[in-house]
Length: 297
Image (cartoon, rainbow, N blue to C red; front, side, top):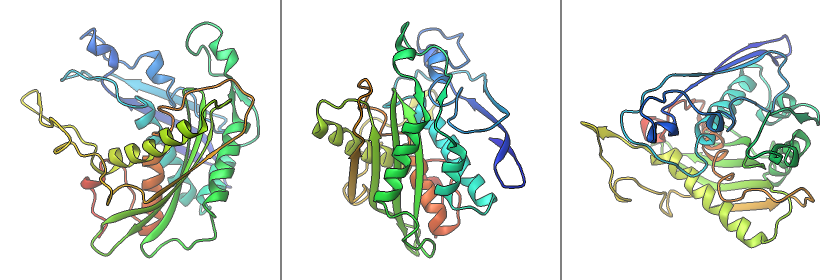
């Protein structure tokens, strides 16, 4: 991630590069670049008003067989973009939420090119006004700016659009003197278009907060001599009750837009929001996950 900032601290140029073994390598060993579907997941387009933007993808050979994970390429792309936006906010000496809203900019529709089968892109345009709205709601529900950051406590925010659904999450963290991270509260705002079953949506997004926390805390897969080391949940841990967020509030935006995804879009904003909150609490930036690779004491 690279950016050049103007005198106000806003990016006038933005460059990002992503390198990962593509899912296509599961079926064709010669595939080394991310496919169009993977690159469309938060990478070829970012929802920011930047006059000069470039995204790139490099070669990566898959050394082990890989498969799909909940929200797929959105996970690492959202982590990179939303973490970097937070870094730029501090570089510009700005409040992270206010800076993020400045980056998102005015209400408009983005040209994201073809999305899925013919006609789907026209049915689900990338509407920045909807993204702004979920960010505003999440920050409002979390009382952003009214709680003190630093000295072991902080808030982080992240936004992302995936599967045509707009999501913003604000995460509160507490970090003690031994470096243990606790998550008292997650506030998520969702615009998934017309919602037929609100309770099912809330369940999905509460589960996504736990799953996103798991990825951030302990979600590491390693290999030895070409074989995966982890085999079950005792050595690939999902967040237990003492590590999961204590409370997750999900706020649904009333919408007449066509219904969109709810199973996966809750995951991508959680890890960057956690790590942005850790920075607010400790001044220590997380650029590598899981959190077990970092020391916050």
